[in-house]
Figure 1 (cartoon, helix red, strand yellow):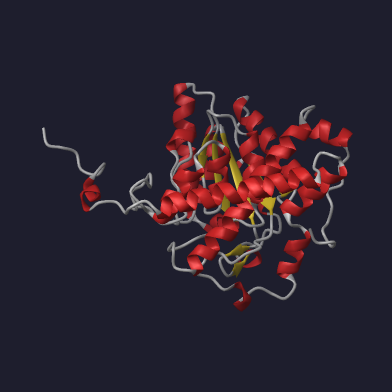
Figure 2: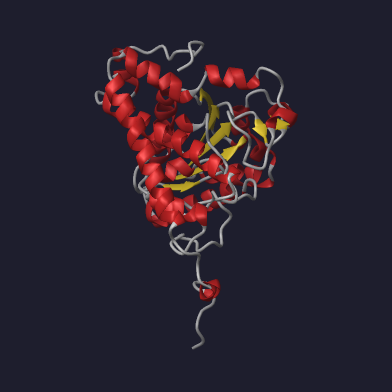
Length: 341
């Protein structure tokens, strides 16, 4: 990794306090998933440029949020993703092969080609379908939290969204309703500082977006979203609060978008000089790798095995998806229209 990387300043004792006695296993699992996510992004962006898939929205630079949060969640919790939480579905158990079938919109795509590419749906792991309509997942997550409260379900509803979504009507309506009814919902705001081409300072004059939570009667916290240790700790605290009947929380994860907004974007037209370089200094994967090597959890041999396995799994999933035929015309009305009578 780059020599200019900003290190994570933890030792083994501190990691034990923040994560628990099994901190090394937790962080090694996080590293494996983050390497898979980075490998997937690189490969899928290349395929899109080759015309083999239609669209892709990478999460490079945000892997610590996706993986750290996923590892903190329980199986019962529901996830309402924004636009870059694909990796979270995989960590929770959605098969990589199914995700590849979705990206190719083939006959084995769980949504049969009806959904926008890179917007997976994974009901089996309580991961609600992504949506490009900004902010709608916020009020949806709140609605489910209200239903779970009525049913005495101990799960937590978790909504992910970006800094741009704080300007949406659903942000106000959702957070206000959650605060009024003290609902078991956790709001995860991934602030990568760009709503496509609009910088965060033009979205809001509030310097710390987490402070908006106070207007709705609950706590908001800002954490370093490139630090998987802090992401895991903050998410677990928010979940415990919600599960304990103490209402909602908002966590603002500050990250850097290290790639274009999507395969349709050119950030060189609007990002200032030096922004990407700062993102590389705070690369969440690089910071975690440095930490694991310094604490003697990761060796060259293990790192090589992790990289080789990720590449093999991604290539295998792609090969299977490319060899699968498209959905047949008869599937257009499957699961859409109910039979008469």
